[in-house]
Image (cartoon, rainbow, N blue to C red):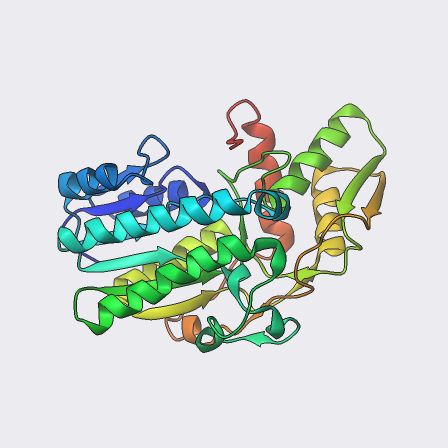
Amino acid sequence: MTDGPVLVSGGTGLIGRNLVERLKTDGLEVVATGSERHLRSARVAAELLEEVRPQVLFHLAARVGGIYANATQKPDFYRDNVLINTHVLDAAVDTGVEYVFAMGTGCAYPKRLEGRVLYEEDYLDGVPEGTNDAYAYAKRGMLVRLEALREEGVLDYCYCLPANIYGPHDNFHPEHSHVVAGLVRRFVEAADAGDDEVTIWGDGTAERDFLYIGDCIEAMVRLAGWRFSGPVNIATGEQTPIAELAAVIAEAVGFNGVVERDLSKPAGQSGRLFDVSKIRTTGWTPTHALPEGIARTVQWFRSHRDEVREA
């Protein structure tokens, strides 16, 4: 991948922690930063990149959250992500970074493609889902700038479009988490308290592609090792309804009660089916089926209840 230092921004999140562990195992010199570095500040971003002067930058830092957070904090999500991406890329250009592996978001695909296969070349062609449009536009802007920098010969990049990633080190906040972590927490707490009911948002028919973090990290390392250029979907290529996900989690937890559906709550896009032909050219294929990945996640959450990330 590189013989110089690797910088991982957002190194304390779900992807970041697992990526740092993998890169260090591969013998690379890795510097990771988390929320202690306020990258919304141009000065802080410049100082960080000047200090590390990486050849390869994994830019994962972002303000993220689930449907509730995205829908109720739109101005903050847009502002923070635009500032972070602008200042980090400014500093990357100024310090001569050769390759940026940037984390995009699959939720920014156009709403008009709902129910259709999502190809990377269609990513910018249409308005995103309304519940997360502010976050989506901020993330799309980063891709536009990265492509412009590549066209000018300033740096090369990979822009990752991940499926719904889950696993150890996820954010298990009761309101701001993504769907897998949120449901894992709800089912575990219900089982521990002896409750006989857990509620999910929507009617349960919305479908998502759920990718275990270990498989995502393997794909990222392969792509960066290849110096893959441009946007690429990282996904299993299969969709699972939220109701089925809830059933898998309930079984892994040992919850035997009733799953209720709150139709007053938003469910987001009805489906999100990624084309995976590009990532498969690297020889990558996911190795963790959903029941196995969920079981690992439940076990990890139960073992780390006192230290899980809730932000």
